[in-house]
Length: 449
Ligand SMILES: Cc1cc2nc3c(=O)[nH]c(=O)nc-3n(C[C@H](O)[C@H](O)[C@H](O)COP(=O)(O)OP(=O)(O)OC[C@H]3O[C@@H](n4cnc5c(N)ncnc54)[C@H](O)[C@@H]3O)c2cc1C
Image 1 (cartoon, rainbow, N blue to C red):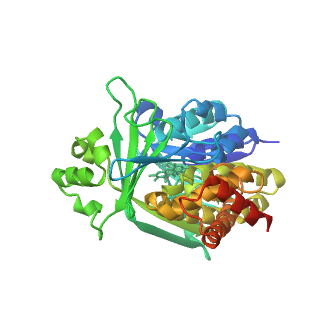
Image 2: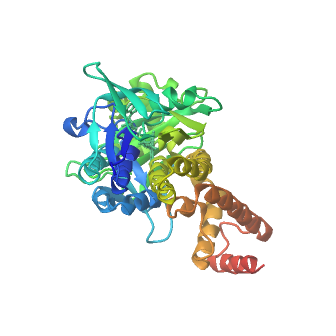
Image 3: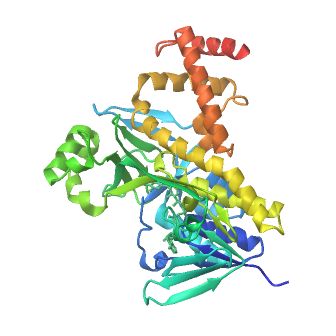
């Protein structure tokens, strides 16, 4: 029997990993990527410079035996370190002592996954090939060579669109079809990256194995460690209509004053912040929802299906989980790709939606609640419940980041649990001063009900 041909549009994070899955499933894989080969030019893969990887991502990588290669380029982060305006810091572990998330460089992981796709996935990646049209029924796509302008026509048994948030496959294919639902919502905030370099001896200027947050109620800055001792800091803030907003930072003096006033401890580490302010562009953030995710021979994956805002660090993780789940669906329906694609979209769509809702919700947690006394009390009580009933109780954050419990279950169950703890606190008058022993006793009585 002739080997089945698969076409992947986009050799980003999801497309590269998916090619390994397809190869292991016996497909001949051709990948078409708009950009030039980043491994030859050492350019950053764009967007944010580092990403947080958690359980779902590792599970999908390990399932095709490539997790350990990525672990070589991953830095553990065991919790959040909050930097307050008065210069003090506080720390919250992410989960149990053995649980952490990881900082990975976007450029490094994408480059490594491409090499894995070629070597382990036996994929042929065609660079400088921009998808300009798709025929979903015929399994055909047209690409324009971004260097020569030449049009290239490709055909396959199946087409996987992993071409990101502004997917051309989605615009040129799915969006032209009847009853295709689509929404694109920009949030009022944008983001800008700032590289905090290493000390001269290569050491880190901030504590290394933690994610740093400067929560400022309506906005925040975060920093994730890189291997070379630097940190990638990202400032998330409204574009306008707020005392502190990007459009108010017009001059170097505005930038300097802003950092001096709002992030004084960071300013001390980086008094030249105004000089590097323009090194990275100001970028926007949107949630893109659509449905269906499949039509004829084409199926959407990763950001092409469910682009999100980055506040839960789940976009890539969810995209990698798409690979795992789509593979399971294809195994369950080996001779019926339509049934496989349909099973995939039906099970993944509610999870994509929930992941997007969780991402929006977590912006408020990160920029505001992590410094809010009521939230800190809730987390303290939750940590006790989790310690006393580790088999019965998983905090929402743990369900999302340290398990593969479906996102929509994590969202609904996690919210119910948080409401339950709020009641427990209110009914029993628990305060920040209540001793751990008393909290444990109240928790035991509540759980026994
Ligand atoms: C600021 C920020 C921080 C983030 N932080 C995290 C995080 O901490 N953790 C996390 O899990 N996720 C994070 N994300 C989300 C994550 O970046 C995305 O979910 C992930 O990159 C999606 O992978 P993808 O392969 O679907 O899309 P992409 O990574 O966008 O890859 C799409 C690929 O398709 C190519 N392409 C595009 N158009 C065409 C075309 N017409 N023809 C051919 N090729 C094309 C692109 O060049 C690219 O290579 C963050 C996102 C942002 C913006």
